[in-house]
Image (cartoon, rainbow, N blue to C red; front, side, top):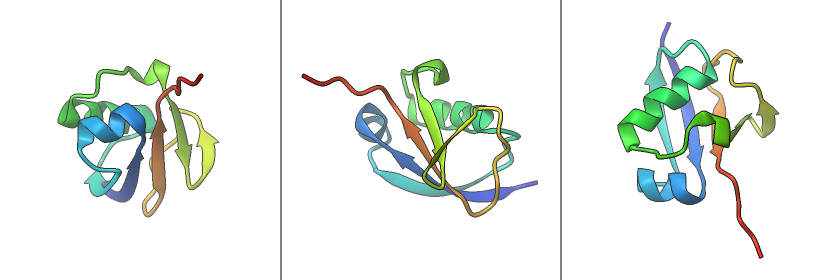
Length: 81
C-alpha cells in the first residue's frame, strides 16, 4: 500500500539531497526500507546503522511501519567541538 510521507534531511543528508525536506509516496514496509529507497535515489553515503530515525518528532525503530501522513527525519551523527 502506498503512503505519502514528508522526509526531513539534516547535515550531510540535506547536502546530498539538495533540499531540507521532500514529500513522496512509497510502498516501503518499514523505515529501514524507506531509507534504503531514499539512499539509492539521493546517493547517501551513510548506512542506516549510522543514523537515527524519528517519526513526528519522536525517535523510532527502523523496523517501525511507514504510516501515511507522517513526518520522518533521518538524523546523521553530529560532530561538534
